[in-house]
Image (cartoon, rainbow, N blue to C red):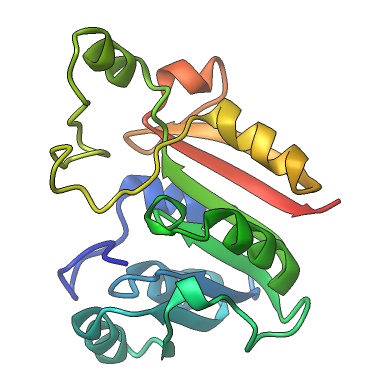
Length: 202
């Protein structure tokens, strides 16, 4: 999964907001870690340890250049290599929407981590709704692709994820939207471009 391509890039405002959910000193597994900027930040600023999981060769090399431990695995094949509760936190940031086995990977996130933090583009954001009303698929900063070249094979809203969590017996510990790094807690499904959920097995 490609999150950022510049090895020297620092976490975006949205990623910094998500990073604050990770406890100091936590053991972290970052699924679809991209070039490793999030995990590098957590190690440097919050005293965390752990691994990234990434498939793309260039991104794996970028993680290594950052000094981030990375495993080159295909997430579509699951997380059977990790035992229950192997990590304090499992991150799935801009990963779920790329996966064919999204529901399985959500359950695996909650199995492998004591808590899971999941973030994805919120299709319920009002500009997206307006674009669809006008007869077009949305193109935004968080959803920057045209319909014919997008790597996102799924779209969902915050309410969709709430229903999915209930279906899979996951307890939502916290949820909010993000808009340009700002937490949105009032009507986030309409007002935020990105959804963030903190979950654990019920």
